[in-house]
Image (cartoon, rainbow, N blue to C red; front, side, top):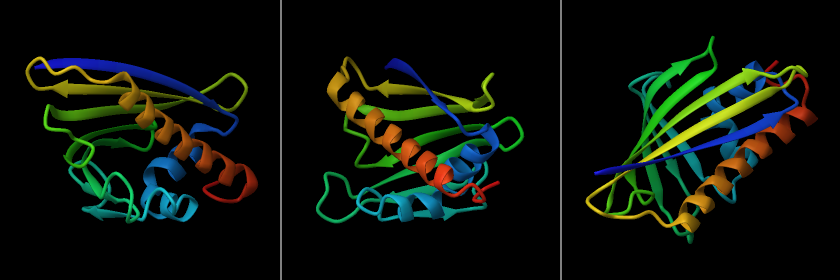
Length: 159
């Protein structure tokens, strides 16, 4: 088994509390409303905290039907979120799991910096294709930007 790790960093003019609350804590309600073309629904088994299972269902006719992940940690005070992709179309045969470690920090200008570390656990000598990883990162960034745009247009939301 090999582990390939990537870290992405994005900035936002929004404070960590708002962007974390909207994009992480309430993602199962907000994301399908903001991006119905990309996310059909998000089902939560549990209270949304550690140990909960979330299933993301994609619209019919796309490349993926669904993915399932386990919440490993949700810290609303430190704005950290860790989860593991455990099942679904996003896991190819030679990929055991993918873990994500998300952290939002206050930036000097009053906004926030989000850091996402993704670790891909491959089986055997399997090598990940860079274009597949890049496509996944672009989808996550698009969701982040959709939430950010919504919050900027709706200053009372998630305040």
